[in-house]
Length: 331
Image 1 (cartoon, rainbow, N blue to C red):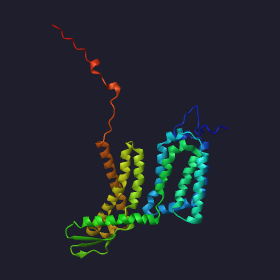
Image 2 (image 1 turned 90 degrees about the vertical axis):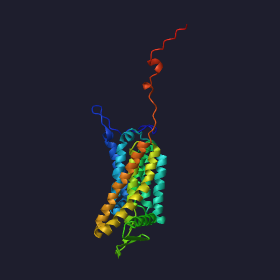
Image 3 (image 1 turned 135 degrees about the vertical axis):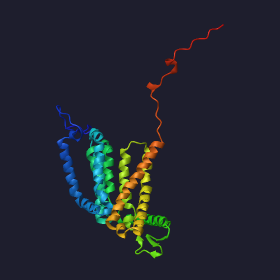
Image 4 (image 1 turned 120 degrees about the vertical axis):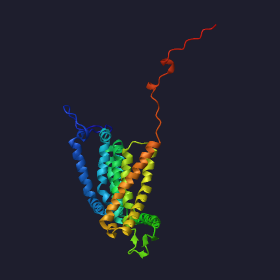
């Protein structure tokens, strides 16, 4: 039995045929991962099922993609992950797992905070990874683990508190834009836009519902921007700006969505401003958001060029390359 200080090697060795990528992992390691996965699912299967049901809501349907993106992040770092030493951190891993499960039991018995169940499930997963892999291994996989947070829907009360101001902002801005159209008068009453065109009042009034708050676009776009900022090689300050820009970009795109919906409602067929057409318009905004995001990234990449030192090998001294000047003859 190897001493605890030595790193455990889970890679499969074959002297005749060297393996690459995940094929280097031994069958034993995959069996251990499967056992841990089954135990984890057996304990949290109710919370996992509850999450999947919530993902069926169009506002959180991107949750189905988050685990796939997390696996993609893990695959991008596979060489670093496979080279990381496996030194189980029993103290911190057991401490984190005990705290997570203890709070989970307390939440069931006393707190009954629905949002706490998936959060504690996530911290339990992180604790298991730390327990079995150790700190060196955890440093390579912490982002794919915590990236799963974007698959957790926000609580209803928090969602409402955030979406309400976004709905109000979208209604006010869209009203101001629509009011610029000749023969059209638009007035916002909270999240409702009352429209009168050529003296005819349009009924019913245009309602900026919760689906139009932009929260769906904001949460999904924030998850994807974190993925892009992590994968693209650029200075840290540019990554911070790109991440911070996701909020105003998502809000702007949602204002565009509400305005376009209003134009369709006034000048087109009202049926195209609701139902499946309304949802398709919302999905199209993700492409607009990424175009703005890509434009900002391109702007920073081309306006701010990092200075690089000239390699010493290409510096040619003039004194060594030119023949020495002839000395002047003294009279």
